[in-house]
Image 1 (cartoon, rainbow, N blue to C red):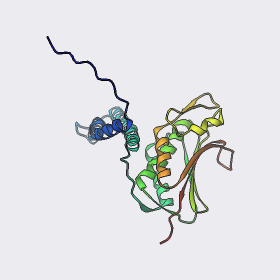
Image 2 (image 1 turned 120 degrees about the horizontal axis):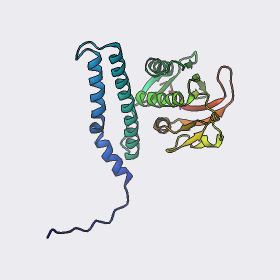
Image 3 (image 1 turned 180 degrees about the horizontal axis):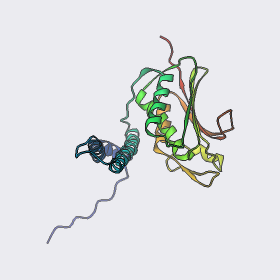
Image 4 (image 1 turned 90 degrees about the vertical axis):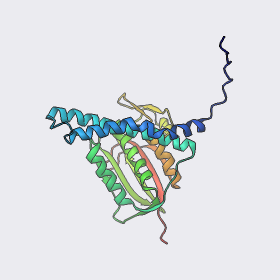
Length: 248
């Protein structure tokens, strides 16, 4: 007769241990998406002959969806990196105007829908910050992307300015939450808020990551309802500040 083993008493969940295990498995999780993207791009380049217009459109949709899915996966893996304590930051001198201009260019090339617009306002004076360019790009891209998902075609505004010894970056969209107090939970997992147009806005992992990345750079970040200001409509505004790099 086969020997029977009584189940062990489950131990208390160690979320850091789970996160570390997920991080170790990251290449395995990414592999299918990388394959889908690579094969789609090969088809578009003529791997199996010239595609018809309809075929090329379908394959391009698969390619774009692959990149989007990989982006969501990478966000989740970065959350696991945060939980595991394994995330690392580099520090370089960065030109803020150049950083934001590059971000807007990339968004306009790949993410904006036909009925969306992204308006950038930069200071005349060049401002410099020290930090991890990849993580700061990721933070701002994520916040703008969150607005794009929620704003439903309304223009989005990205503004930068100097405020004392900090740079101030604001992302404004036209989303009006029904309950302003909801914004105090904007960066927390599971956050949802009903908008005045009866649609729902929910927390994106990009916002959670942006909160941690900005704080890791010695900055602050918050969400609020902002009143109409010139071109900018009444709506939700996420503001972050990062110390200006000191001249050596």
